[in-house]
Length: 113
Image 1: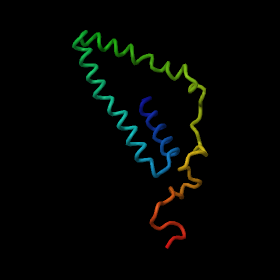
Image 2: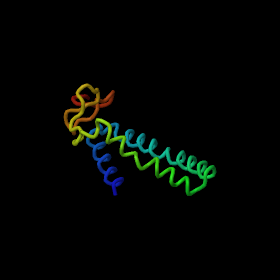
Image 3: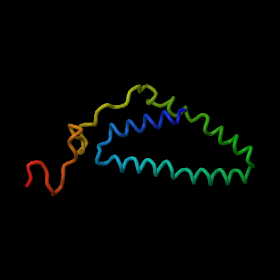
Image 4: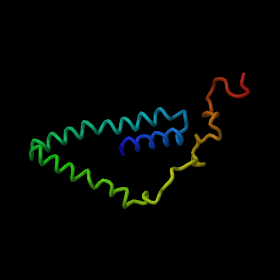
């Protein structure tokens, strides 16, 4: 259940915070990074399973995964309660209105012929 809720929060944040013209690239990059770890984990699990056996491998991996929450609990992130609401002002692609898009190069823009 926690993974499902986290996916909803991350997806909503990404859609709110990323400009529309790069949202597809941001989502594709995040998915590629997340999904590329699956074969690596499978390979590690297979090698470890062959080396020490399947039951010890399950206990080892449970011991590795269980304390992962400590990374967030001991970081400054634990004090954060809200996601950022606005884009940083110093990024060149920040737009002032959701209806505005990135500046166009060539083609027909506002007031163009």
